[in-house]
Image 1: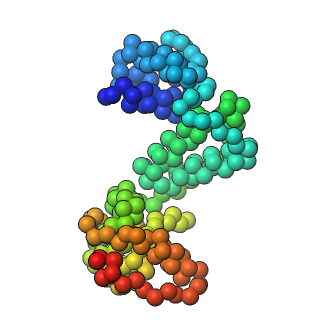
Image 2: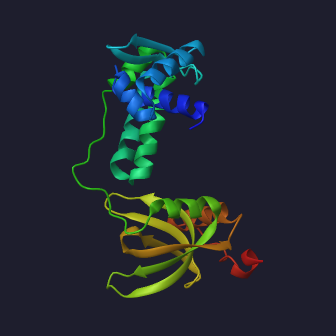
Image 3: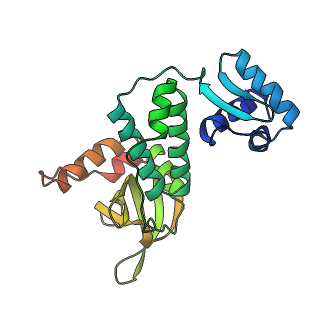
Length: 240
């Protein structure tokens, strides 16, 4: 692993792990010996990171030089902690891990007083029920949305009847009890919501609908809000 990548992983471990964190745990997280770990700690300190601690006692990142200082009000910090905590409870593993990493980066950029406020936030999110179970890899759906590329689905309706659908995925929406993909359905030539728990399989294609995702999503949201319907998109134009 390149040294720069190793140092970044060490910083991220210091942001995310409960502090103080032992050298043994940090060495395990970064995949190096403890001797190398001690040298990497000194390298980060020389670069401006304020890391308290020493061998035998554990380490604590008190100021993160890799990130500019952030200033949030207490209520803004509460909102950030609540929002990212909610993501960890309702989203798939990849998105939940990203929320945890984002919070660690934000907290790592704060002055010490604000770090304490964030770590001991008054509001938290807990869910006793399990998040919606997806039979497909949601990272594939997210990537298709970002890349504006069509997906080929096998989809089961409420009665269990299966159909093959080509869709232009526009957005993933987390509802109270289910998870849906907002999309343009190439089979029905109309906007549709696809429940993720009914998507039996999904495969990426090379068909692009760039740059239509944003205007299509705007039209769909307007329709759901009861606004006037815009003319449907012409598929052939997007393929050309």
